[in-house]
Image (tube, rainbow, N blue to C red; front, top):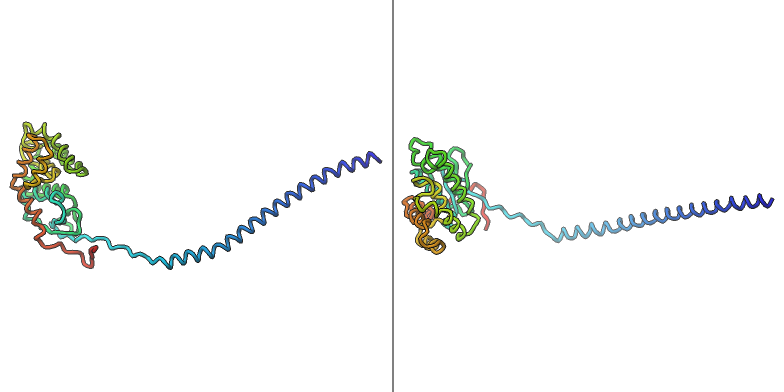
Amino acid sequence: AAAAGGDDTAAAAPSKKAAAKEAKKAAKKEAKKNFKQDAGEAAAAASPAADASTTAVAKKSPAIAARPMMTKSKLLPNQLAFNPNVSLADRPVVALTVAVLTNTIVDYELVSDHTRSGCALGLPSRNGAEVSGDLAIARFIVKKAASSAFGSSASALLGGTDDEDIALMDQWVDYALSLSKFGLARRALSIQRTLDPLLVTGTYVVGHSLTLADVALFASLGFPSTEESKVEITRILPTGSPTLRWMEMMSNSPAVKEATQLAIGVAKNAEATLEEGASLDP
């Protein structure tokens, strides 16, 4: 009997331990459930307040109307437009020079346009389409003139008929364009160091006649066609530099002088016409 009683006590002990374990588990589960429920109620209570706050801010902050974008004029075919308020070097001086050199300047109408930061040309065969950028316009004018019946002088501006001269001309034009991100002093010194060895024995940058490369590099120097601008470059470059001699030659070119007068005198022309319904920023 004693043995039996001992067995019953041993069996009861594990049973009590299991029950305690189960009770502990149940308590944890209930605590978790209560925590989630409390958190949900708190979030629900906070939500209306947040919505009310957002609505109040929205009511206090009126919508800001977007500023109208500055509009550009609509160019007619063969209209060359640029801003008369920018410096001479930022006007289409290369395009005007080559138009004079190819005797096609009469084909283009110059208009002043205060809404533009750069220059643009209305394409002849596409109403409303335009090409922007001085060098891009200059290339277009020269190539168009070169394809005409009297295009020999225009072909010479592109480097003539020799493929190597044409490639060299393109290289110098690209070089001139790459300098546009620098200030005038750095551009002038870079051009001088590059051209001096070439111009010791040569008159022009490519070949034996004026090309688009000469005009593009002259424009990169700031288009020093006036006495004041030439003095500025002379102060930057070393005395006796072949590049200074080349600059003097370019500035005395009749085509460069006429292009300068045209670029400066554009403000006297009629203002560009805006598209119907367009408006300008105040």
